Amino acid sequence: MDTKKLPFSKFIVKKGLVFTSGQVHLNPDGTLLEGSIEDKTHRVMKNMESLLKEAGVTFKDVVKTTIYLTDMSEYAKVNEVYASYMSDPYPARETVCVKALPLGADIEISMTAAKP
Image (cartoon, rainbow, N blue to C red):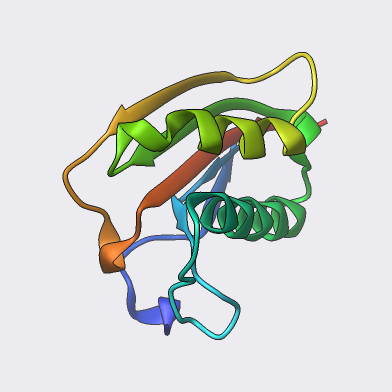
């Protein structure tokens, strides 16, 4: 996917904070990962990890997360994978069930991080 033509930034740094755009379970080649919700969540977190690194921060710097799911019955599985990437003190977070996500994705995550 050519993100240069989309009307948003991958991330913005403002006053020491990094605001990311939402990440879905896209493979590096731009195709949507198929598989279990655990596989999809790992892909989203790996995508987010790369984006945060590009912005000069890590998961330890994240202060706020928003998770969007199309099926709330998957919450426990998503939470388990998410927790494997994060550490105490955990970021503030909300999880929102939505009817649909871009590209037919099942999960999307966005984060806000504080520059060290």
